[in-house]
Length: 414
Image 1 (spheres, helix red, strand yellow):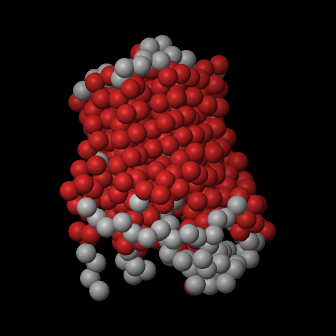
Image 2 (cartoon, helix red, strand yellow):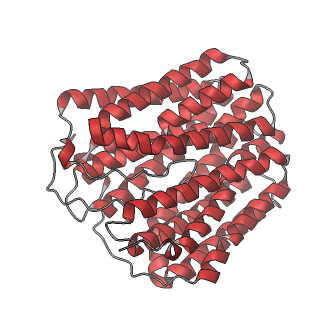
């Protein structure tokens, strides 16, 4: 049966509009805080507040969706996110912004839960991969469009208001399209110990992605500003990093289907670590070299979450895929909450370039763990692997896309 993309368009357009706001706020907030002479540790705190809010929303917002239905829940979350962002334009305080970013994180998690469960319910097994590929393209396209605005207009509270308007605009496709509310299935929840027993490497890839990628996107503007670069350079850096992250997802997934998840994850970590070393050695390098290193680091690190999700899904029992996605989201959000605060403190008491020493340490630790697991356990045979579905990762800030249910029996723990 032919896939009717028109049925998914309202949800995809709504989440793309919200991603424009997310993509704009990512580099804008650090730049505005730098102008206010806010310490790097507090900038990291604001970034972590959003991740903490996202974590809380992922754990709690499903109840609201069940009670209100998808359409009304999406409206509720979008309005809440818009209100929080618009209040930031009126309340110029790092602590106030942390509170409001946390609130917007809760609301944005709710929007993602609505969008993903809506798409998952409307897609069948034959079309699910294509539908979620479109979802990823819509979200990453929005995250690229946001920094483009910052490349044209200087950082200001007016742009914060523009981000709030983008959240409000996300309501229009839902209101005009009026897609029917799907029924919400109740799947078995998976605890962190269950996830660890299923795939230690998959769990650590999710946690490490939160520790590293969220820090890179949240605090790289601080590093660039310390070198004297303005908003246009920061916007170009963020756009290039986002495009690299999107471009590498599918090739990395195809390669992991052929040669194994863990070898590709190890190669990604080694490449990202090498780019981190390049930043440490670059000093006051030309902009083109910094952009090249940023593209290399973002491109090499971006597939790690999807690879971790693939490793986990390769070894699941039938019926556990959605529960595993929620558990992976929990460990990612935990890392994304801890990372910016920790790295922000390190950068404040050492130097802005310590960002890349921190990233190198995270990548090296993950690489050593994966290598040790590769020596202890064999890879799942190619014909028994679940189909790889790219997962959006920070800066897109989306939860794990629910994977198609595997039909095989439980696997040996990797």
